[in-house]
Image 1 (cartoon, rainbow over the protein chains, first blue to last red):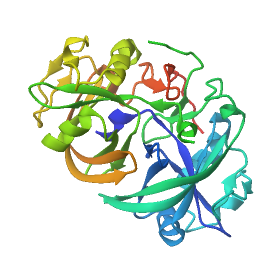
Image 2: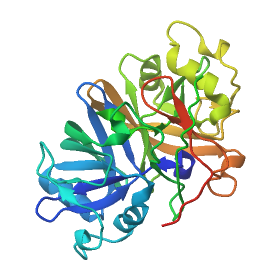
Image 3: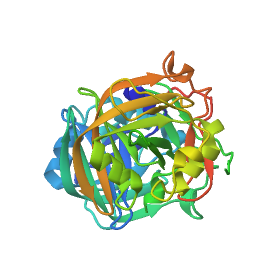
Image 4: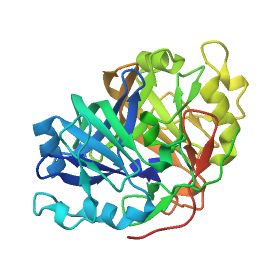
Amino acid sequence: MLEYLYPARTYLIVSGREKPNVMTADWVTALSFSPAMLGVAIGHTRYTHKLIKKYKEFVVAVPTIELLKDVWTAGTASGADRDKTEILALTFIPSKKVATPSIKECQANIECKVVNEVETGDHTFFVGEIVDASYGDAFRRGVDLSYRFILHADFGKRFTTNTSEIYEP
Amino acid sequence: MLEYLYPARTYLIVSGREKPNVMTADWVTALSFSPAMLGVAIGHTRYTHKLIKKYKEFVVAVPTIELLKDVWTAGTASGADRDKTEILALTFIPSKKVATPSIKECQANIECKVVNEVETGDHTFFVGEIVDASYGDAFRRGVDLSYRFILHADFGKRFTTNTSEIYEP
């Protein structure tokens, strides 16, 4: 019944330090304006789960549709088996306030420190306080809807994007 | 920095029983496949916060762009001041497993019982176990992207939708 929440925005979660790992995640939400907080649910079996548990920090990176191939690879290959940085065409750059790197090609990188971990069934919900962020042209003047952010259609291989049309009630 | 997570899917949260209340919420995420769980962050000052605290259940309803006017009203008027059901063109129908009603005009209604409440800054994150759900044509054969689900562009009055284009990596 979770599919009724779809299509859902798709993000990349960066974890780890010297050997960073990237996974794709749809289960991300804002949580608080002040302090600024967000949360991400990560499956217990994921390598990212282990890395966030260890370093207590992560970066939420915001890809656009041009990065779809890497988004798919990051969501299907496991960093436990291989160094994902070798198979992804993504550039890791230093973050500002956390040791976990950011992704150059993404339109935003939101740097988070874990302040709470909540067990929710087969996932852990990591609550992060946002300590800093960097952004690209898509966010220079508010949220620019001419950029095509990624939506996962369901739990399979179909993706879509937002339109650039604006509706005002 | 939360705006970097936008555009974000917009849902309706139904709470209360005899006098149900509806609010608009972007801060909703899936949390677990088994058991099926989702979470929603509700501001401390919201009337919905009081009602979910009281009844320990809520319904996540999935509107499409045709309902944008009501989505906006539900997100800006407070149920503490007035009975929102009187100003919304929405039809409340019985849910299957919770006493909180569903919304007839929505494409899905996900019925949740609260299993955990997590304080996250200025919001409470209500963790719900999904106990049942009903759905419309948009979900009869998977997620039908020809339906225009609502995305909130940012924290203001701009909304957009998904396209019907499908991308496969």
